[in-house]
Image (cartoon, rainbow, N blue to C red; front, side, top):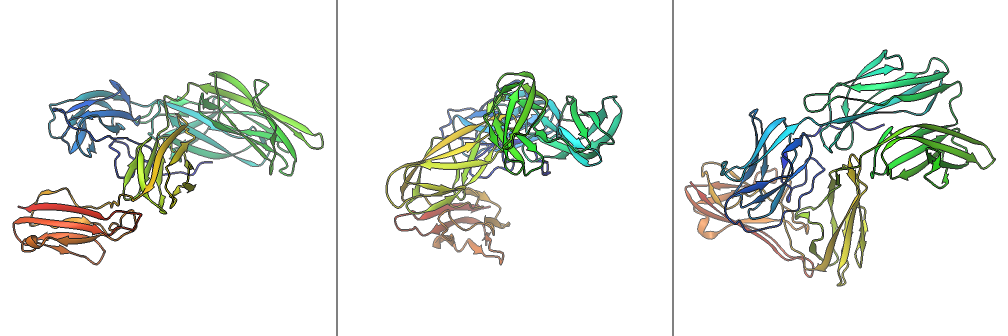
Length: 497
């Protein structure tokens, strides 16, 4: 059973130094020089709500890209820098015709896409057998496809083999991108075969769908083996097949089959469970089977229908972020201080967990990379198993031990004009430390002290206040670390008007 998670918002995102609020998208943006005139190009004239579209921008002055819908709705994404061949990932949040424009020149370089509802797949997940009189949890999943990260909302209607309504359920967001679920507890009144079918009614952004019939066998004592697996899987996307053998003290092994042909070697039973990771290939309707043999010669088997549909439209994408620095680009080379450690933040389009490994003199533990004191490059390897419509992916990064570049995430806006009557935020309470764990110290240039001053509230923030109109230069400094990190310097000049 999945743990519910709050429904995430969808819209346009440009991924740069900031961590994703979606947790699922990664963008590699290469600095470039604008050739003149904003150009925005995309993938398809027809898009799906919640389905990522990679946009290529060239010569856009920003500061935003807008998606303007004919309905009056708007999505927005900030452009970091400007030039040629920058990229952004647009996840449409509304229906209808949307035109992508540069915020400073709406007549230049437009790209149009018609956004439609996402298709869905409804499946029932339940054990193959149940014991009479014992409550059984039956879970229904509604997955948006294409792939889309939109989590469907609305209601499910559950019917039996005679088309009689058993119950109506409301959907909750599931862990992972683009999925919602609902469940109920059912008690078999007597021995026999029971069939369930779930119908999803759809919502504003998702189309309706109906699950295949799911068969549940009730026996007085319950079956000795059951399969836990989705009734619909995608070709090319690994799925965990689990066989539960009763009682859980049984010692032996389980073999999994498709249409009677083995797809696994003998999988040892541990605490009544045997699990096999299977990568489906051909599409169609199959019979998934599991049979076990005990060390004492006992045996048992079970089976259930399985449908394999077309595989994922794209590979997964990993966003690996170094706090205080930003997102690492796949196949990029990065210099880190000798003898230092970096704990990354990692997200994927699929919502799958990211694992790190390495080759060379570096070492990894979880999402932490440890850089050696000796010289010599190492390769950092990030892997995702995919899922939710995405195939697995591996991304590599080159790490060079040396004197690292010290950075800090600060709120200070870029140099330019500001309202001299308003307070300018330079640093939030959560900021003020570099990626080398050095404190940032702010100062005002001597020639600017008559025009402005720094304000330090008790919450740890740093503000800039103008005394009068004029120019003000402020500098943020952090000391270097010998043989590990270069000093950090950030300077801004503001004109109070």
